[in-house]
Length: 233
Image (cartoon, rainbow, N blue to C red; front, side, top):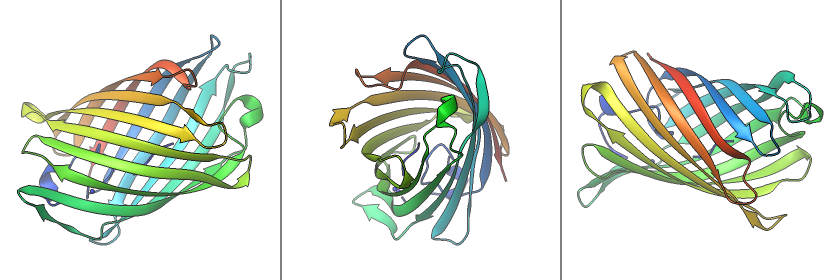
């Protein structure tokens, strides 16, 4: 699951690893997770977005899992995600450019929880956030999103997220993404940290690697690794 809100900076410098960026991209991704109880999962997914208007961005995801969490090897579709992100205001707070955002994410499950794939629930998840251009090379993006099911098993989770996005020379970038969800039903907190290092080889094509770590007794996974291919157009 993902979260999302964002700033005033040049469109040419916008990185799709910022969920509040403006632009048009498609990423093809794979993430491997070492799960608890000696099982594993690989998530293959497409992740993209485009500007419908100057103030409205639409994002999409489709996830396919390969896992052995049930004791058997299972493969099937997990979920699709559609997000609408509205940017009400951009400007400067002192010398700091910013962009604010609010939005709603629709998550449709393929009801394969009996295979250990996703949840048998569908969600409507509002979110809010802001992107702050701290300096030429660093952007900070704090976000808050609430996940609540409208059909299926009961879920009531609020997740805080903080993203740091660095621009390096020669087309390289780095991202640190920390997530802290709170489960209101179980009254438990877990967490996850993701590090991403990538490079745009041309203005339209890039690659990136990811390292992930689960945090807390209620974590979903121990560690993970990912690979992404990025197309900007």
